[in-house]
Structures are given as C-alpha cells and as structure tokens.
Length: 107
Image (cartoon, rainbow, N blue to C red; front, top):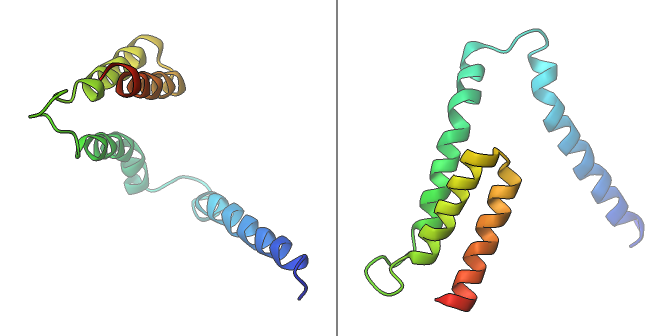
C-alpha cells in the first residue's frame, strides 16, 4: 500500500465505523426503544452535566485568592443565560469567554 492511499483508507474505515455506530440504535430498536433505554435517555444528560461541572471545578482553590471568583461568575452567567435564552451554545460560549476574560484581565 502506498503512502497516499493509506490515509484515504484509514479515513474511509473510521467514517464507516462512525456511521455504523450512529445507525446501530435505529437498526436494533426498529419500532420502539425499551423502557430502560428511554430511562437512560432521560436521566443521563443531567447526570453528565453535573459530572462535567464537578470536573471543571475540581482544581478551583476556594481558600486562596481569588477564591474561585472567575469560575463562580462564569458559572452564574451560564446558568442565567440558559434560564433566560434556552440556548446552550450561547450559554457555553458566553461562559467560556467570560471566564477567559476574567482570568486574563481581571484576576
């Protein structure tokens, strides 16, 4: 196999695997998903968001200056924007920009 065809074959195999994995639930559960799949679809998103929040705040030093102020301010902005606008992309981008500005320019 020459050096030009190997990357193309690799991309094709990865693309096929991704498409197959994305289509698998629809192929397996043709008519209706089982109750446990519906339950997981309902409870996993909030659980994953909670885990991400804990992971993001795990290294925050609340006992030394700036006492976690950038994280708390950016987190509060995300919560307020999400409650007001219901646009997750806007909330995440605004929270990230707020955090970066606070850590680079203010604290």
